Amino acid sequence: MLSRRQRILNRYARYVQKPVLSAIKSPTLVRKAFSLSAVLFSKRPAGLQVDRLTLGTIPAYRCHIADAPEHGTLLYIHGGGFVIGDILSYRHLVARMAQAAGMRGVFVDYRLAPEHPFPAALDDVETAYRALLDTPDGGPICVVGDSAGGNLALALILRLKRRGLPLPAACACMSPVTDLRLQNPSLARNRKRDPLISPEWGARSVAQYLAGQSPEQEDASPILGDFTGAPPTYLCCDVTEVLYDDGRLMAEHLRKAGVAVTFSEHQGLPHVWQLNVGRSPEADASVAEIGTFLSRHATSAR
Image 1 (tube, helix red, strand yellow):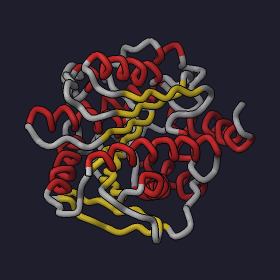
Image 2 (cartoon, helix red, strand yellow):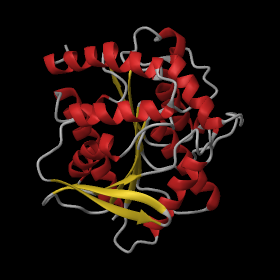
Image 3 (cartoon, one colour):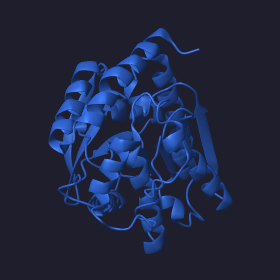
């Protein structure tokens, strides 16, 4: 049984956010609508502080709550279909998750499509991660991503493996998109059930990101990659999401590669419901659970 607050948020997602995402084709207008919604409806925690950073050449932000303990770095890679997402939309979530993990929260402001198509976003995330590796007090590092950010987090791990670079202590992905071939059954099966994301908006965003390049490569569709030796990974999604199979099949793929996987499955929650942290008990519980997972593996890596 969902809480009353979450049921209200679900209705807002279904009857306001989903139609807006589906109807507006201009990335600029969608970005403005997404940011405005976040400013109006996200819950800023008391003591929130946001500081600008530069990781290599990549703009970033440190999001933290005053007096919260910080050991290591939680590198947050935001979602938004590769075309939207900014610090205004995510500062509250990054700070709350970092607090739950007892880590320093860092938001990567990677370049967005269609102005900067694949693989610009992944290149930026890799540059930011490399900069953290060179930061004396940067580690241990945990990588977290939601939706398209989950795609980038998993693709980052594959790149790091190929380059022989140190891997993060852990990875957590919320409602990740893992297969840009867009062939998983839940895309059609959950078309009407998903409270927030329509397959049309997702396909349009992926097309803008790929800009004609093939999704049949692991940097674009990480489910095609070899994750042998990858760090412990937490995945969560809701059975009503159009991306449900992306998360479920990714968990199976990781397990076959010998990765320690935690797969958290839910019922009746919107895509990346963790953005409602501070406003619904379901979001609060999920953020706390992810924080505990990250804290455990970061502590083991110290």
